Length: 142
Image 1 (cartoon, rainbow, N blue to C red):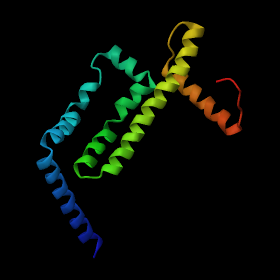
Image 2: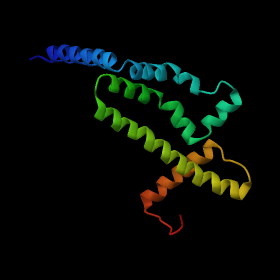
Image 3: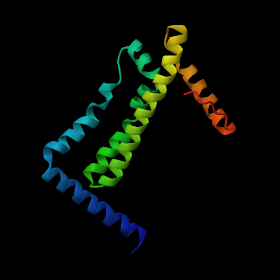
Image 4: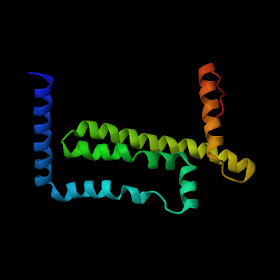
């Protein structure tokens, strides 16, 4: 079997799975397409709110994860559930990690200066954190 024949066969099987998924689960399939279609609505239209969203790690992950969530929806439709769950795990873990890191940085900054930090400060904290990890510098403090 040539690679070209393999691709033709694979594409045909995926098409069958999509059609079968839609026939068996039309409501759930429509929900996936609705999610893909409405993703753009999550991006704030107001400039100030957009700046607030892009000034946080979780906001950046939200705005940049649309490609991955669209791909996850596609994987569900074609029956690649293991891959979809694995990719959902990346989105979920990334979001949680961003919230934890953001809270750690923001709580210290707010405690010291009474305001929230900029994205450049967060980037600098990450740069320094990586440098400390490379040099194996560690404190017993959190």
